[in-house]
Amino acid sequence: MDEVLKSIYKGVLEGDLDSTLENINNAVEAGLSADDILKNGLIPAMAEVGRLFEEGEYFVPEMLVAARAMKGGLNILKPLLVREEVEPIGKVVIGTVQGDLHDIGKNLVAIMMAGAGFEIHDLGVDVPADRFVEKVQEIGASLVAVSALLTTTMANIPTVIKSFENAGLRDKVKIMVGGAPITDTYAQSIHADGFAPDASQAAKLALKLVG
Ligand code: B1M
Image (spheres, rainbow, N blue to C red):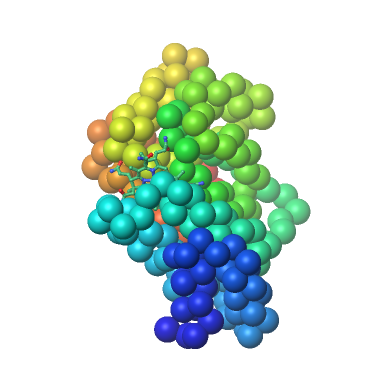
């Protein structure tokens, strides 16, 4: 691994925001692509944070500072991943399901979808099912993207789908789902329109569903 990528990895693992930002800026200046920095620096670091948490070596505070460093890094990379489009392909309402506070993966999905030309309406985290419906009604979105990172909160996704059915909107929107515990089989079982395992495939799926 490139030295600068190792430093970015270490910065996130240690929750060191300043060094992470400095090293990402250095990497960009040295000509590394945003994709390379993401896939070979930031994302593996978060995976290792998760492993250390599982092993009982990291606790919530360590996860929080690592997340802060990763989010700072994503802010630098965002303009490099998003290309400006004059006419958006479609409107997407995205959010993390109710009860769930994880937003890094969801933010990355939003960035990649924006990069693919979609207009993104991000509802943030811990989003009640009805809020997704209200936003779709308000802006006329054709795609809803729901993220869940916990095995407990993935069970709230069917409630989102049910809310669209109750509002008579289920055939007007496509609903795609994703997040670490979600599988294609699960997505099919809850009658979602699609599942993507990562952010770049999420953008491709969005294009396939409504592009
Ligand atoms: Co949490 N956490 N966390 N956490 N956390 C996990 C998810 C966990 C797997 C860690 C572990 O045990 N190894 C575990 C879940 C276990 C389970 O349910 N099976 C866990 C736990 C237990 C918890 C708490 C319960 C801990 C506690 O309080 N005791 C608590 C719950 C809080 C809550 O939500 N109610 C909690 C809290 C937190 C923090 C707040 C400290 C922090 C989040 C900060 C933030 O997001 N702003 C945090 C973090 C950082 C993690 C880990 C370490 C990293 C998550 C992350 O950002 N990954 C995570 C361990 C892990 O994932 N290995 C963990 C990087 C990100 C780029 O990947 O989010 O997977 P990911 O997104 C990917 C794909 O999943 C996909 O694309 C993304 C990019 O390629 N994707 C989609 C995501 N959404 C998508 C939507 C799509 C398509 C694809 O379409 C719509």
